[in-house]
Image 1 (spheres, one colour):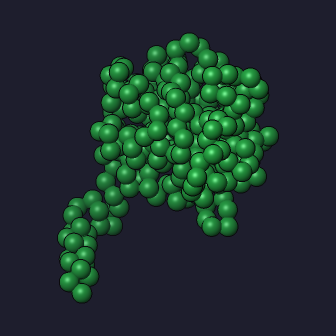
Image 2 (tube, one colour):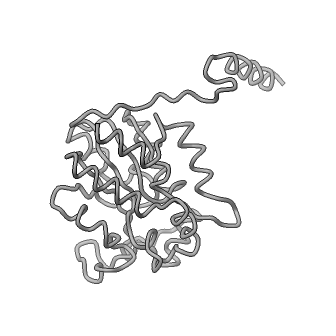
Amino acid sequence: MKYTILSASLLTIALAIPGISGAGLPDPGMEIAKGRTALVVTDPQNDFLSPDGVTWGVVGKSVTENNTVANIDSLFKNAKANDMPVFVSPHYYFPHDKSWKFEGALEKLMHTIGMFDRKDALSVEGFEGSGADWLKQYKPYIQDGKTVVTSPHKVYGPETNDLVLQLRKQGIDKVILAGMSANLCTESHMRELMEQGFEVAVVSDATAAAQVAEGDGYEAALVNFRFIANTVWTTDEALKEMAK
């Protein structure tokens, strides 16, 4: 009972704060600073973004409705044109990852359908054109010798790869975040980067998510983007900010 009363009191106080009641949450925004801001793209890979990818049956509608493929392309193109550092955080599974003793629901699904599979950690045999490969139209951006491709994240967030280290080593403290998929890797990257002290702007239509019986992953992610990130932009808004 005491907990209920306390919660109600805090809610009353919160609703009395200007900018929360009626108008919704505040939007702190994010100002791009040259040399300190980077574009980070999660999982721009065939298994998510190609009609031939193993997840297209559940993510394809969301990808198509958001124009996700073209929007990520526009962000890559604009970042390169404005000499903005670009980081890609990919998802790969190697044979030894299939021997994990326990998995979450989506981990189990990804392993079962062979998502992001590679034959060996030290070989690219069979990589070209596979589900783990980059979407073909992104290759000129990613393989230009300037884009930082981090080690793979293994579940959803960058806690399991070197993205934060790579960003810190280049003096980056502001991130424009896009990629797949909205309520999994993209949201997990947003959360960890915020916890690590980065400013994060999420580009809402440069991502997408699965629509399954349990719910719409994209709609779920939008709520948390708005609750947690410094700001949420559309691709058009992001491009305008990047070009300033």
